[in-house]
Image 1 (cartoon, helix red, strand yellow):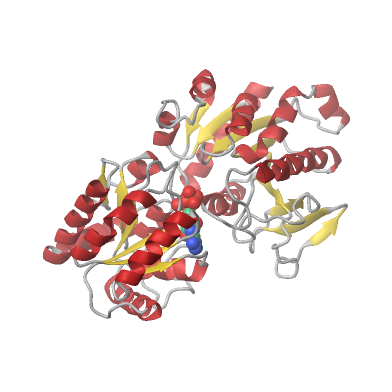
Image 2 (image 1 turned 90 degrees about the vertical axis):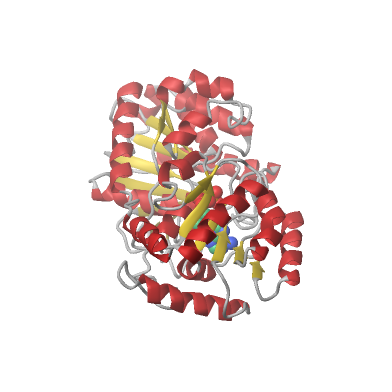
Length: 442
Ligand code: ADP
């Protein structure tokens, strides 16, 4: 089966958030299943041509996903001449213009490339125009372009419904089949609290809507092999490993050497999704509980400022690092005792999966993929009320176990570290989805 996987980013070549992780790792798992999968992303100026050994062929850049055999096509260089994922401000008109241009380039690629996919797998609103092009274009056109099978099947994966609703709507209506990145989010988006004004369209497509949980690439995310952590560790050596990383983290950020539970937050500073408002509100109480808190993220300037002020109040116990920093993210996963994930909504979330692997227990709101992946009291701590009290209550429960029941804590850490969120199972589900899409489009 031949699949063109289209996304706005793909790690390690270019990454802003979870979509980049997924687009950089799911194709590798599909390849292992025998799929001839190729990736298309924008040709951003920040992509280092030398490092990724980019070859140019008829205006298309060609590279590979890391060390793998999965080709990556870089498209629409002119459109992105002055753009980049780290420069984008989510939701702006400029983004729509860039990605319309990107979709035009995807269509040109379909027409010109010798290699013809059977499935076009698009991700999020960015691909809307390409999916709707396929929907309204006749088989005759595709056969003139050299497509020999019956039709080009399309899939839309929804990673996040909250941006560019007009384009998301276009994508939802056009795709042969749709999936959201966790079973719970697939159900949630049919309801008014989560559908972002697209309830009608999503419910109309309910029969074609599936939920497939994201995985993570343990080749990147494993404390045993992670070159970015200060002390590597396994399920057997995690206690000393974590102690070493915690010391390195405290030292790097100027935090007091002794302190209670070390809590980490890594993610976009986005009050609409990531629960930054309730986190900022809870900070004083978290410190009063004897915790240290490390926040790594960028985003909303108002909340960045608010967090910086908290850090200034507690220089020995709170550090807020307001930038994108891959190295520091890894050190936080390895050095913290627990991760704070107070999201208002969370389509899947990857950091809880990374946290568990690193023996860092997630303290998370029970929503979307967080509900699907964390077992309260077994692999982490869940809370329901979207409020700072809800968050502080869950931190208190964690703190009580951390301080008074170290053996129970160790059991949770061990269980979390042994969970399997690798891509293999979900990649097989995607394969079945491709087959469904092919059957539908045929
Ligand atoms: P989302 O895709 O909604 O941003 P996810 O939890 O799915 O959230 O994925 C976030 C990914 O981005 C993780 O790999 C996380 O480590 C990374 N990340 C987010 N913010 C930063 C940052 N400031 N520095 C480094 N990595 C970050």
